Length: 170
Image 1 (cartoon, helix red, strand yellow):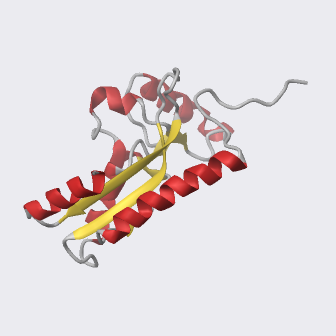
Image 2 (cartoon, helix red, strand yellow; image 1 turned 60 degrees about the vertical axis):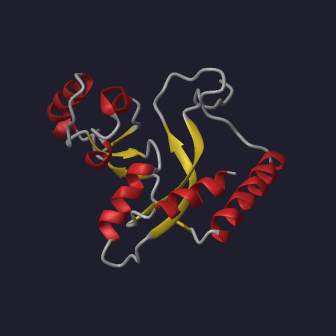
């Protein structure tokens, strides 16, 4: 019997490490909220069309695509094989995959603003700390799953927002 193992580029975190990470995250959150930024969370997966083409050709190769359900249906075997061949050639095929894990937090944030702009108050100030995934070759210090932290202001051209972002980093 083989011993269970983690996928390359991923890690387990002990209670001690999670507590330390939560302390750091809470410190960052309190700074963001002092400046009037609100928390935002977006789904771990997005429509593939939302993500593709936003990161350049190299970035698109690093997106983890999620296979559609029902690909093992014997009646669709030929369609699935054709779709797989197209994806292996770098083309998109909705018969095989329509969703992907988020590569970063920026594109999902842009999708959120586009979706909800009628209900948002501008300038809209948000922060986000969530895991992201990259189908990259794992190396020392580079992981396929990691947390990203973003803070943004949209809907204002005021340079005061830029100054405020600089103060947050200081």
